[in-house]
Amino acid sequence: MNVQFKKGVLELCVLVLLDKQDRYGYELVQKISDQIAISEGSVYPLLRRLTKEGYFTTYLKESSEGPSRKYYALTEEGRTYLGDLLTDWEKFTNGVNQLIKEGVRDE
Image (cartoon, rainbow, N blue to C red; front, side):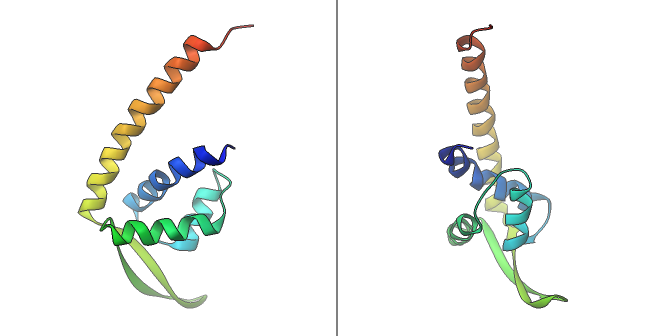
């Protein structure tokens, strides 16, 4: 898949996944990787940036499988931002899909 497509949509994927429930970094990587081939290293800088921007809070939670894990939780500001991104995404994908319909020849 085109790298630029992935970069553009990764932020939206992370926000959508955190809207339903709090998750730790590796869990986010695994969930996204089930659908889109990504590298683990692409998610953590994004998590740091979005936390710094106030869209997430973090907390540590004990794990039965090793050390405590850092969980990410969406803030109200993050939910608002997600809503804005979803609106933008819908407009964008509708526009692209319309151009594809108009531009691709039926053969």
